[in-house]
Image (tube, rainbow, N blue to C red):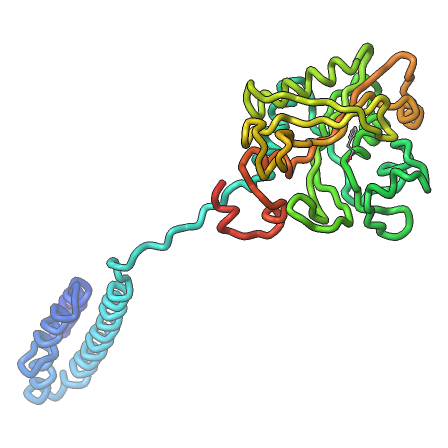
Length: 335
Ligand code: PHE
């Protein structure tokens, strides 16, 4: 008798386990626990059993009854949960598109500038944005009270710290660290307290260039900047050099590229002049070599600046420098 009960229990548990939906499970329940179910019949038959067998067999039937009832309930819950998950997953909803980032226009232009000068043998140098007065001015031959300081609209940070107004201080840091020859560019962010307009913002980006070796001349400077202009804007671009003044170069020039937007006809971007002003350049002043301990009898060098924001504006046709700082995704997602 005990064997029969145990076999029935085992079969019931197996069938419960194999039921794959609630309807199949209900059939199993009816087969064992229904009004004419197999377990029900056994429970009913207890009365007819010999009195001496009743306690042991009765206990076993009751245990089987509880085991099967629990198994049915557990399986019922599991099947319902699974069904609920399937319902929650609405496969007709559109998917969620991941938003893919783009490179900032200033990153694109910087990478291109770095690549072109890289081909010409320049490596990239870096320096702090919070700079010492000495590197930003003194060692670039701009002593305290020199009138050239006025043009820099400097943010003074207290003590001898300033927000660097150009990337030229990186020249000094590189020459302090390495003996000649050096050939570096220094791209980075710079700051000036300027009245904002379409081409001026409190923060902008420059790329300094420095080449010091024996026999470097103005011809190298003109040749290298012209090569660069053609690589960036195409073969037709012309480069113009005009005399200028910077305390750290002698002689000094400002240089412009012919307007690639209107082909020199005159447009809004070149303000009708046909020329795009890029920055200043010149031969490193011997006084600067004095600050870093280079022998100016033996070595000469050229240096140039470059406004990266401007280059990006010309190259991508961006009309306001402020777009670079505003974090407007409609602008940034175009790259
Ligand atoms: N540092 C200068 C500026 O910001 C540009 C410059 C760099 C001029 C190197 C000459 C040589 O205006």
